[in-house]
Amino acid sequence: MRKQFLNWGAVLLVATWAVAIWLKTYYWIPILLTVLYVVGIYNTFQAKHAILRNFPVLGYFRYFFESISPEMQQYFIERNTDGKPFPRSERSAAYQRAKNISSNVPFGTQLNINNRKYEGIKHSIYAKVPTKELPRVWVGNHQCKQKYHASLFNISAMSYGSLSNRAIVALNTGARKGGFYHNTGEGGISHYHLEGGGDICWQIGTAYFGCRDDNGFFLPELFAEKAAHPNVKMIEIKLSQGAKPGHGGVLPGVKNTPEIAKIRHVQPGLTILSPPGHSSFSDAAGLLKFVQKLRDLSDGKPVGFKLCIGDTREFEEICEQMNALDIYPDFITIDGAEGGTGAAPLEFSDGVGMPLEPALIYVNRTLEKYGVRDKLKVIASGKVLTSLDILRALAMGADMCNNARGFMFALGCIQALRCHNNTCPTGVATQDKMLIKGLNVADKSERVFHFHKNTLLTCNELIAAAGRTSYDEVDASMFMRGDEFEHLSDLYFPDILTHVGRDHQ
Ligand SMILES: Cc1cc2nc3c(=O)[nH]c(=O)nc-3n(C[C@H](O)[C@H](O)[C@H](O)COP(=O)(O)O)c2cc1C
Image (cartoon, rainbow, N blue to C red; front, side, top):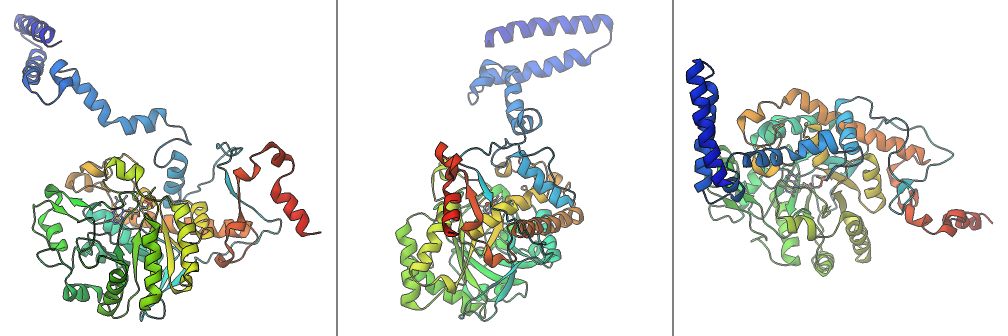
């Protein structure tokens, strides 16, 4: 191909130049072809890209189509129930709720509900009228001095750096309007997190951004100073996140702007690695003592930790140590392995950590086994996007839920899958000033507010449809699953129906 390109290209060039000179017009055609020919010659000699070496000009088409492949999928191929990680139907519901327009769907379900994966709510003949009051939950046990009355649904951790400044301001402003909290992510508190006036859950990761010394170790004085801010309502120690458990974050040098470096207390321009583990503790007792230390330094604000469940023996050890040391975190955030991230190695995203459903069931039972369930709140995250997801998480033992990518949809994210390369076309997950300009804070903060509100109002409607009046009544008995009807005999004599009959005999 290279030889053909060089030979035929030269012939074409000579011919077009000759025609243009003869006609004394259309010079732009040979000029354009000359530029392409020079680029092509360069490509035949470069050694980095085999495709471009073999197809010196045509090869660019591959890169172009590859770069717009997520958009092509969405616009021309994807059906309503397709789309990964979130199908179009769920994204649409999030957009519509955020825009405060009807999210009703026409004509009936498009899902195949006659299979074992079906999960539905058992509605009641005696459905109630849904309340308009949005659910709230108290966070803070007897060891906490500044209990916080949190919304049941909040913005999950996403740092300034991973998201743009405008995205952070819009999220925080929406959180203030709706009375819910906004988790800072491990990048720490920036002035953008404070601009909107919303409640903050300050997340502290392994790099202690915002409360570290020059060597990256935890600095108590700096922590105490920042934790005293009245908007900081809760403090979360990040142990791991579902999309990359056991893998530290990376802040690339190019993204480490002087502004971000100042916020994180690091040197600008350097690539900063978050270590995989914490330097402040190395075992369960150390973790709990650190929880207590942060509680003391913050004058008794609620302190908890976030993790994706991996080795279950380690979680049991923490529960054991809670009783031994008499130190109880105020909350534990369980992030499922299906959780999102700005960037992670494929193997970590696809093959490390426990998914949310088994993790919640396990955590809940373990906390009960050690008699500490009532000492703390369990917060669930990991594809908890729709109202059904929220109720399912509550039924499996969560007290509250966090969500990251749903709120990104509210900000206008189109699931372009470019969070990791700074080219997010909607200005949400990028530091590119040109792209960020497209994100209108006033408009998007309203959407964040409405997404939260409408999602919880739909939760209220589902609870009422199940004949219940309060969130305390949400439990597993409210749900039916397709695998209950799996066998043909069950189809005609479903177990659940025979049980009901027996109960009433
Ligand atoms: C862009 C982006 C950045 C994130 N940054 C953090 C972070 O700094 N700390 C953290 O604990 N989790 C982080 N997460 C994970 C979320 O907080 C959350 O746990 C996870 O995405 C849950 O799944 P969801 O997006 O389906 O709600 C991030 C997720 C995304 C999408």
